[in-house]
Length: 419
Image (cartoon, rainbow, N blue to C red; front, side, top):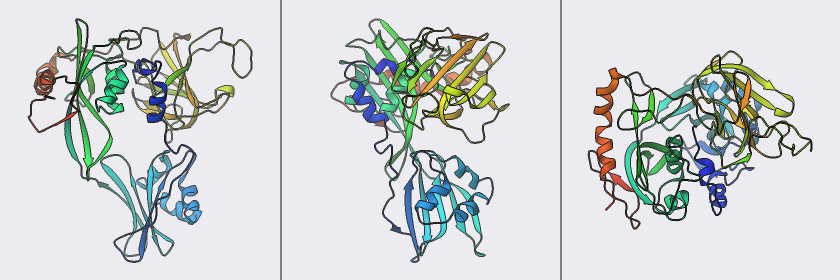
């Protein structure tokens, strides 16, 4: 996540707002819904929210089911083994037949659901089914009054879109020092909904930020080969070969400092990275494409993953609560792939990611080091880029900024306006 945005919002008066939004309300508790009747008169459904440290077997045990039931599910095949990667905050719906296990439902993502059920022979079967949803395009225009983050929230813009805006423009603008009263920005984003409920955080399609006489714009583009990125209207990339920050965090809890006084050992020890405070279980992403060189435990670092990106760059991710799936040494990862989850293993006083970047073996401050730029739109994709992004850029130009309005839902082919 190339996010110079997260510290950008963490200025006086905003800490509480960030914590309220980004910290799960029941961080330490698992909430089970009341039993609801399924279609079959003999069946009931129990929905359970996954807590930190949960596995399928612990969830089954808490629901009054046996360890053998969980193993039967996991042994069905590869589809069912995705349940080994459940994360805190996920929800699992168990189907019970007179208190005996009869099946389950689990949303793999916003578009697909894993279903486990008994076939006619009473054997367990796993299927992945598509979930129907509707896409809506939203336009919003905001004038900054006081702070970027609070102004956006007051105007009805979802927190995830504010953070994505800052991520996309993080290489173009210093949101810590450059944001001023009177700055204006526009967003066009898509959300998917099912039964009137929004799924996920939505996708930012285009954005514009104006500060004084400076204007920067971004548009999302998927190339014919499937590569997704954000570009300026002339095709210049707004990204770098690396994410600036590999996790969504609330604040930098400790800066890069070769002469830091260690908070636990009370001795001067180099702090060769930055500590990014985030709730336990927050996904940690690979900062760039590369090959995993280490997965395991490293003394005070706790659980650690290391990635070699090329002959010049290496990154290290420490204090993880766990690793993604069956991540192992030698595995190939792409930029933005989840490799683990925030924790506080090793010598840590609270949940955070300790992130290090090394250039030719030497540690550098990830916040300040110059990183290689991503390539612009290649010439063979130029016509496709213009055709695919033209309507969105035109919609962005038509968005009006009025402090009295809220984000507006656009009909298909509708010009964006918040008047």
